[in-house]
Amino acid sequence: MPLSNYLSSREQYDAHCREQFEEASPNDPAAVERAMARRYPKSTEQAADELKRRGLRIDVDQLSRRVPPGCRQVGRSFLWFADDIDAVAEDLDQANRLTYDAHYRREQGLSYAEHAAIQKQVRAKRLAVMQGVADAAGGTIPDVADACNRAMPDALEWNEAAVAKAVALTREYIASQGVAR
Image 1 (cartoon, one colour):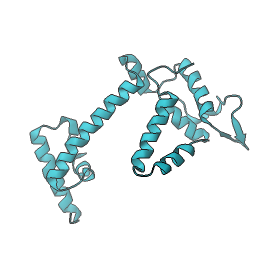
Image 2 (cartoon, rainbow, N blue to C red):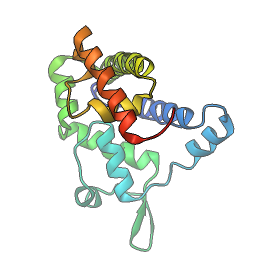
Image 3 (cartoon, rainbow, N blue to C red):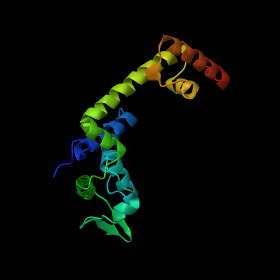
């Protein structure tokens, strides 16, 4: 039975993992494939983390009590493969054990994919604003973040005056670091 659309499906989760590996190794498809192949089996803690990332609320102790039949075991440790995690995901979906994000998506009528696309647009806009400030200040995005995170609102809220202030703060921060750029 497929998961509710406000949860991350196996395919969506795998695609997200692949995107992260591709960002980490942009010019090495073999490394991406090796990383994808090494994701399983997972420990119970890692399996619980995957379920949370997919929108399902569970902790390690709860997962230890929901081990599906056929889940492999070495000593006292379980080896969680994708099928085992998916079986628990379906049970948790039916039991309505959702994270706050999944509840939000359900209440707003958003699918996981729609919400992910919105978040991606927001991240891109925020990075574009911060890159503009970094370029004007002669620094990097991490410099802008370090200089402005505590002193200013979110970069998406910056108007022209706030951008000018961010440039000034970033220049001050860079100067205080004593690193020539």
